[in-house]
Image (cartoon, rainbow, N blue to C red; front, side, top):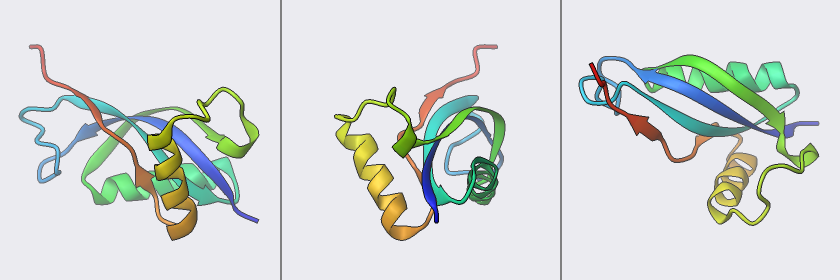
Length: 103
């Protein structure tokens, strides 16, 4: 049976990404998906982000959100993304928290 996973991922945009790498040096994003295991979830997320021309710098954490109590259960935005992932079976990314290049 599939579980619902959430991963907190640091990404870097590549050329032709919807995030312009000339303006955006990186971002953090929460990604939601259904999978049989944490490793399968991270594989799905990696594939989806690669399709968006985003490189993963780091997966800070990935967890079965139905088995954790530290995620805010009253976060309407997170609940919406989680339910979309549960219903669609796709990887659903939340808001990208971006930063520019300070060099």
